[in-house]
Length: 364
Image (cartoon, rainbow, N blue to C red):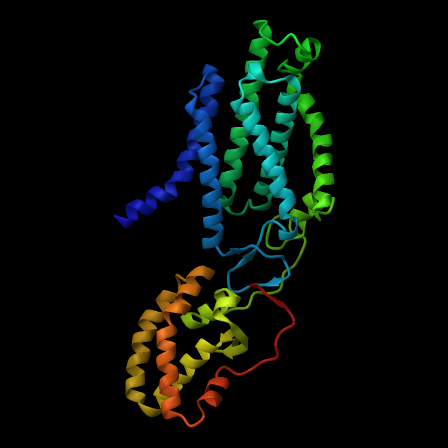
């Protein structure tokens, strides 16, 4: 049952992609569509955004700058976080243009509104194309922008076709008649809208500059990154942590929650160490010294459970949950240490040899 539900959830973006392509082909052939198709498009884009964030979380994509230290298989953001506002603003303008030309009947749209709406949609197509180029190595990351491109192209085609039909039937507005006769022609409207992209983008850049965005943010958003197609930066080498799941918690959880203390050495490589990890390791050390037979049995059980569990801890939020679930055991461990050891804090402090604190940023 669980597998069936998971399969349905995974298949949704693929089904929506096929539907969008089918809807475009169907309109090209029959020149008509159901009114419900518009809402399905909006729902598809919303679901796509949700899936995109979920997939990014599951595939260890971290929304940080290229120079931030990461761990194991984590990857930096495909968009420079400092320029994220610029990209989001352009996409919001594009979506607004889409809503205008898609949901307002063509007969009620002034020529200027239609041209500006298409110009805004062009900007959205441009961002989607850049996204596809940036993430072309990951098929799941390009599903949403490809769907948006299909939807935007269909929207422009439908508007131009319907505007041209109105013009041929003499149903255009008498106001701005000469301007309307030029803008509503199918051969003119897309090109005029393309020309308007330049001033529209210029206005957006000027406004965004007031909010601290650089004029070239739209370029730096893609190039000032690491790990992706258009990236021009080389990120610090990832720190590797082993499959001991408390190590995973110490390195993978939110810093404010798991409270990492320092960098230590475990099995020959660097790991991020927090107090919970040190206490657990000190407790195991005492167990090995006092009751070696029992320790061997406990270690065998732990190896069969702890290591497999660690393979599923790929989220900072999940690591936080594991950290809190381990708290009762941590309290038991500390009670035992303070009971059997003369200097328990000394034993805790020497777990995992200290190394100099590295001069790199540690992500929150």
